[in-house]
Image (cartoon, rainbow, N blue to C red):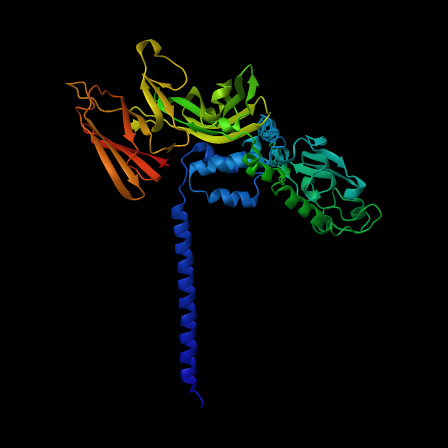
Length: 540
């Protein structure tokens, strides 16, 4: 049966509309996906993070790393990425200094000092090459330009040039550039800003002046100036032979020079990612934060070692274990702000050794640190066995603005003991007027009582009574289910001031084994503001 022509046109038009609508739906779906993906990302307000990828490592970060960094959603993830970025490039990851990072920032400083020309030196072409490849092995300078006798490989003859420089590298690794790499920079504006030359003719100041500055072949009538765009600026070589691919060589070199360098120590990436699996002396640690001033924070670092992981040696009927501790805290840029060294000693009578192996040793170092981001490095060594344990941790020290309701960390403690007046001061486990032993793993036995230690800052004080009005709730949850709730009344908070310390003990005997969450809710009734803080723990 034959379909009438009008129906054929109608069907064709319908199909075309269907294809257009389908394409529109697919395009709309893609736009929604992109919008959804963008909404998941949280833009940073951190000035350092905003400029890091473009200014700090713009020339050495790979395309894959760049895309990975853009997909990160929190500042913590971004700082962890930066940490791993430099670790991947560290030739000696077991030493304090990252030589690659130090050299990179030295090059940026040098480029800013030597190559600035109306814009920072790191943004110029010479700055880019210097930062990426370091100082050249040789520099040929023609700072004033002027009369120039071309070498035979550039076609011979004499011309007048703009100021230019030729940098020579004996070898550039991993770039398919090979040996004897020559890079030419030209300053056509006489402003001091030298640009990477794509063609040999770029430095020729009289290229567009007819019959002047000709090459040997052009003077002999064997070539024309226009040929230089095809022949790479040379026309003919020494023997009159055409060199048609030299320009493409320059373009290939330019492309190679503007790519990010490969990571030299790629094999170290596996070592970095699995470093903890090589630790022969396992240990756990925790950090807590308490306000001193608005941006100065009391920071206890607590380390737990199991006795069964230590090597004891018998000396005159006493089993002795010794562990050296080395700790270092540095800023995200590598500046060391704190270093501490100490010894954990454990002496046990031989007759009590069996019971001692079931126990732990706690060590605490308390530091005063300014708010900001830091890297904490801990190295422990068992003196008797030589076993070493290491931990590397990105640490964010919070700020406590004076105009905001704020709180310390919640410490879930094995014990909280008030100190006699004579013992007040500094020392291990001392916070204010209490001695607080944190449970580093937040894991408790049902037979134990869990201590809760917590500080609240910047409560509003009544002008007449000079006291705050606040309420505190302790909420215990298992999953989404609330187990119990305890509310502290104002009478129970007697003595509270602008800063308030909360201590509570929770018997665990009624709890089944499993994972729990403790939520502390504080309400400032005078200012009508509140905060909530949570801590997780496990009951065995």
